[in-house]
Length: 292
Image (cartoon, rainbow, N blue to C red; front, side, top):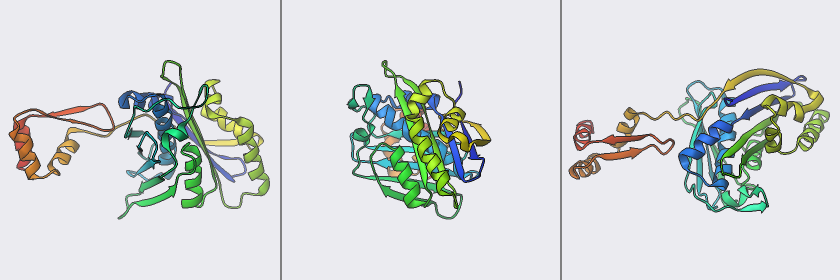
């Protein structure tokens, strides 16, 4: 089953919603980065959030970058989403030890840490990108995204994210939702949303039961009802190509390229976001030198 996200609004138009099934893209990311279970859970949550946030900004040719640096063993997490919600990313340290809150429950907060920041960089195709940053709240990522919207964008938000890692360390299910209150939402609606979030429980449990993104939003929002406006397939997608890699090599400068060429060996370049490997012969490096 392909991953997809849905966007909508409650029938009273006071609540904006988005939910996603991200199982396949998280599986692909874990495969590329060779993550251990705790890193898979943290990375998967960040990718899931980035996909929804990127899709919500709706800027053609723009992008949204989510950076998390919490001081924990995973180091930094970087995720980039295009305007559709296709994502790519990497983690600084994919091989982290298994830490559990209790048997069967991975401790993502301990893996990410709380001594650091969550930063969102929105490229809206303007002169300068929008950058917002907040101190991490819990390192669980969902809580931190919720705090980001409240503090940096002044939008009351509930973010729930989940990645269920199976016993064989594969990704069983992954997904999440974002619920945002629009200006003028009455207390009655706010109370219903809060009660619905508590009633619905963990995202991973709902996904593991086979619930779709539509089902999950229906479970959370209850009799508020949801009008679905858009359904979009999303995936793990890297935009690297040889031309981009050549440009990156040229940016190293003449001295470094001359050093690489003088070694007389094929020079490999691996994309940090995917598992594609580009190789450059000494002659090809010398040809790049002519463009410096």
